[in-house]
Image (cartoon, rainbow, N blue to C red; front, side, top):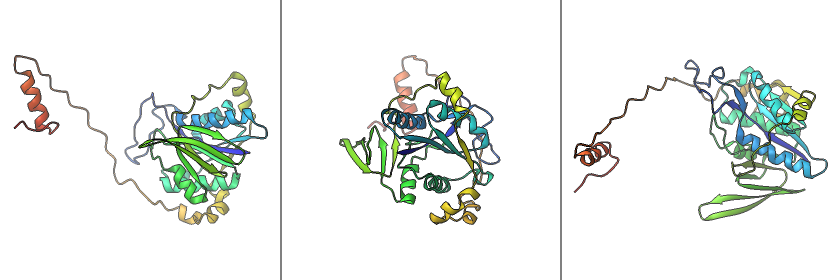
Length: 269
């Protein structure tokens, strides 16, 4: 069995975050680039399954700038057997549709039995990648999985619903997105960090994926034109100081008036 895990390098959630006002894109220079923790959980699920079975190969895949390769090496250190890194300047600022097309092309090229990913990244928070990939590949999708069991020819998962918990089964090949309910990802051991330097890490450009993109009805010449553009980006204004109410016997009335003025409570009859 071959499992592809879509991992995403993102700005560190504990560091500074900023947009480049000229482009509206994330300024990756203001903080360290790390693997998104939710995709690490997906990777953990794949590696844990590989440890319990025979002939299970885990491949980490990402579409990210060249500067993100160190973060991708962490996936190899955690236990992935190999990695694929799509690097192409033409993908700068790619929207969700273009990203899905490129990742679907990589999946076709890699030919896995299962694709795992996080439910939503901490930078874009799109939350639709698994469904988009399933549509493009014509595979079943299990989204928002809170538990996951991988079998020889199917996956079984549970997901939250309005009325409780839903049990879902999908035959392979399939796409699964996971939530933070899955086990915490492991920390890479020293042995894993050293072995990661020797594991295969393939880099691909859009030209390398031209045939697969054509099969997905997403020819390369169409990908070179942006579907969406950033019109303008402005820096968020600084927060104004709050109003301090000192109780002089009328604090309650002043608080009610403050809330009513902002339509946070209804007016008294």
